[in-house]
Length: 462
Image 1 (cartoon, rainbow, N blue to C red):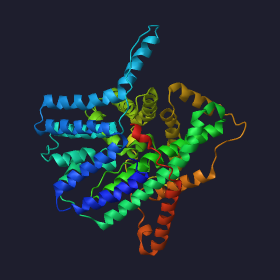
Image 2: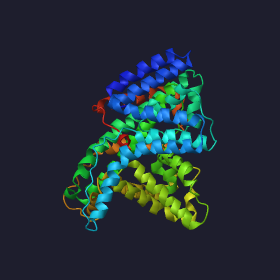
Image 3: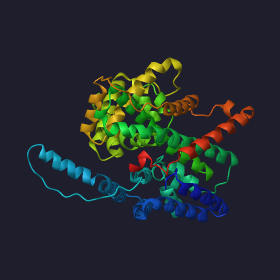
Image 4: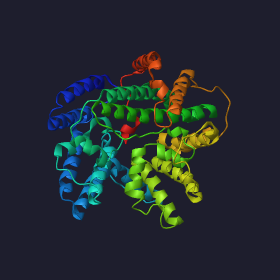
């Protein structure tokens, strides 16, 4: 089920009402939350509920009395499902193509496998539970309903944030009370996320899709517009989803982790990755980078670990060499920061106007890297870059739409004001009441006006 669909607008108030009606029974409330989450996920294809149920049963029972063999079985089970459904055809095709490059004709059949929505997200979530228990950083829960709700919690089930059991599970194991203030802040966040998605991201998508569909037909300025459109689209789309997920969770008395912190105002690539898809970045840091040795053990090992992290991160996003190339580009951009010790310079504070050159440079590098993310193959990416850097300014610069840039400017302006992580107090003051509700009304109207049958979110494919 899509957040930006009529079905969800009907689904959410019904689930909200029944959920709080059951507030006197934690077990019934969690059981209903599981049922609602399965309906939410099964709306797309009910058959893949079997995979969620499999992961739930596997990690719950193996973790009750965790041993090394059980931990290995958990890793095999979860990563095995991910490998089959997401990477089987990719590795088979890559194997065949590799032999073909040296003149050996290999024949291998691939299966027509449908990629289940959000499989990378809930697989990593259940994996973190097993890993934390194996490391004795978390005690296994005996409450099956709470654990099942942790795995399937519908607001963040298909596109995150990827929650840790140490944070989300305790919230599901204790009685929750309704908070009016939290509900209001949740609704505000839902509206903001919806604006990012249906007004900003979907508007940019219409023009980005046309430009990326046939880059050879456009001049360099138009191709540059295509890069900018997609850069804004993917941010509005994914951060918009995260905002809606976090806001929806607040309606149910549950707090999710922040997944974005104005990443396009980062002053270097290191800061960008501390602000973009934070739940995934910290997952790789805690469960892969640090176990590999992190920055300990000398320069060469540090470089190796950075390369592994970014390449695996790229592959996590999709079974295509373009995603690997995207990860490699970010690794290359990060290495100079690591070698000079500059990668930890901007761990605190936020960008100021004096940082504009750094912000612009980082934004440019990140935007160019998105070309690999958006194109279907490495050859398509090279074609796009060839046209972009041919500096062909002849002909008409197409698809420049002032309205789109107005909405982009509004989104970035709000991001700038809230870059410290909080809504400015003056905006929530009583004297701004009329203006605030006026803006909310306009926001609702714009979202409804631009709602076009529920366009999918980019990160659903991961």
